[in-house]
Image 1 (cartoon, rainbow, N blue to C red):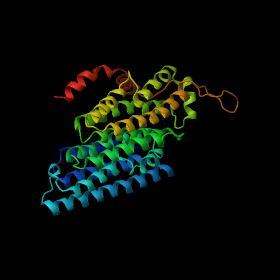
Image 2 (tube, rainbow, N blue to C red):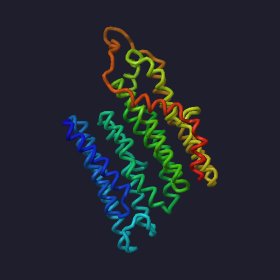
Image 3 (cartoon, rainbow, N blue to C red):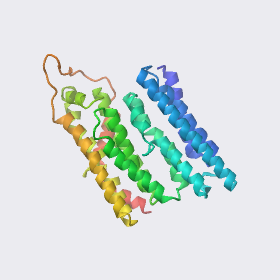
Image 4 (cartoon, one colour):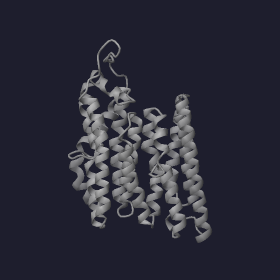
Length: 348
């Protein structure tokens, strides 16, 4: 892609998200979301592959549906209450509709079925943008409206953690596994949104820090299936020995960064007398942990067959920039000791 066109599209992505962040009027927020969608569509379809075009079409239809629902709900709110202000939502009907529209836009279960299919048709770089940057604007709106119906938000969150864990069990495609991982993490964020918005924001940032190296590792190895991970030893032995820790951090094991948000969320749910929800979420985390362990096993503990029909890949020097991967991997593995400081900041 032409660098000028790429720069324009990335600028459009940033501008759309910034407009949504800065808006207090529903029409302006909707316009920011639309700019975001229109800017990423050429990035998704840039390879002109049938799967990429199919994924782009699915994404466009889903986002258009969510945007239309959002516009309808905000118009209904203006008709009922006489105002367009995002933070002055009082009627339960438009609040519920907007919550569901934003849940569709970010891929919360049971409105999630587009996300694995779309992510499967994209390359890993665009998939990374889809899993991280594209979640920011809808989440900013969700945090602003403070959904009054906490039951709906908890049900969406719990369903997402369960679907994200259960759906990833039987997958062999890495991008679909990462999509279900995204759904599960979004569920954890949504679970606690009504009770502690600052904790939701912390979980979102932590998820970005952990997902970034996971995508970059698979991109560096040019891996798209679990079987192709077995050739990683011949390409980057040091990185292959670190990757299981990155994956286990996504799974939420101590002493890695991913443990902190899960621990704080379970603590907050228990404080809110939602022990059953906390228990189910912890069990769902075990489901997710299984497929992260499966990836770790395939990558670090197996060696691909080295015969005439399946020769290992040559160990050639990589031409890709590895500094972002190094920084994000170090953050994923080593930031847990900052947890007490983070908890102190959350309680201010």
